[in-house]
Length: 449
Image 1 (cartoon, rainbow, N blue to C red):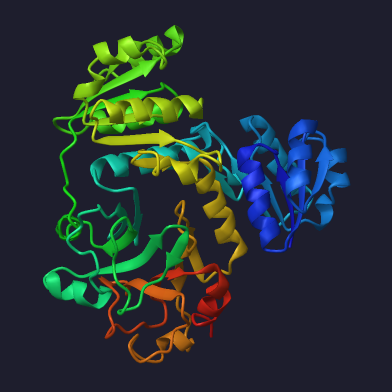
Image 2: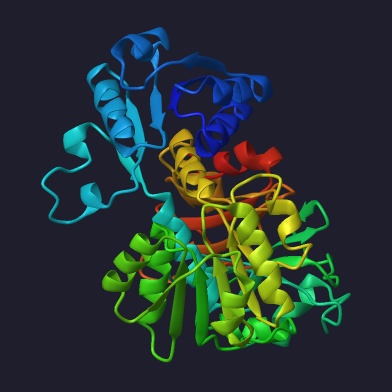
């Protein structure tokens, strides 16, 4: 597949990296020669300096033969126009990163289709939703929902005194017979394990649990974790993500939210926009201000500024002062692996939303969605079983699934269930599958006729 990526920033680099790993023919366009040099030095892709809205530049990139154009430049208008031109020049699929909600509103004058855009991605919205989910699940390091919210994935790091240290995975269901759940993956050090029954849990493991949302609190307690209620929240950064988080959290009962923004004009704007939030004008580096505003009394601290170094430092300060839950916006590859090892509870990234959607486009129509989690070297696929596909030829206990693949949940249309040995999959069912990269193609073939 030939793919053109507009924008060589962090998101553009990540998209190009994923595409090049999958052996696609990738061309990256940007006006910044330094950014292009960094991409060219680190990835096996072609780079072209120029504006993605220029027909001549697009022609030079081979637009007439491109199958997919991904526009992730820093400016919305560049992304929109690039997709419009690509659509007119015969590109089959166009994807645009657009920060503004104008094109996604129900009553918008223009729709994405009117502009030749097949998919609009709003990474900021996705990141905000992830943070809110993490705050609702206080003990979680990661949280995702599947099957229209009927199933939830929660990541937990087992404590040093975890009561399940040394317990085989096969024994866990018997400890909570009333609540179906699966340990879908385990991260131990840098190794990802798709567990079988004989695998055991160990202290400091990061485990990923699949269950219905209403059952998750019981499973979390089984893992030796507490679900402390979060009522007082401080958000550092009045960015669009920060405002989305503040608005959603402030709508919940008994939630008291403070938002700190260093730019006075932006702070005044957020104060008008968010009447239920206490907005404070101040700097993220002003430790006296943070202390005076009660940082040490907060249940959660969220650092969501554009300065990722400040996000890390202020979260560590909050942790030092006794804040139980800290979340930082981190997109730089170098920061993510070390974030939890130095004391951060959770991190979110804008890049992942774009990467997930691109990965879905690269799969077949039987792949409904793709999810990834930082630090988890596995893909989470939502697949649809085709008629007469191998996966429909018996119960899961009877089928021989490849090592490195685990079926976590099945949606039969009229009901959904956590997958067990007796579960049977029929044509048309939506299935959540955890799979290591080395066996993705084998897993997908099981769902094809």
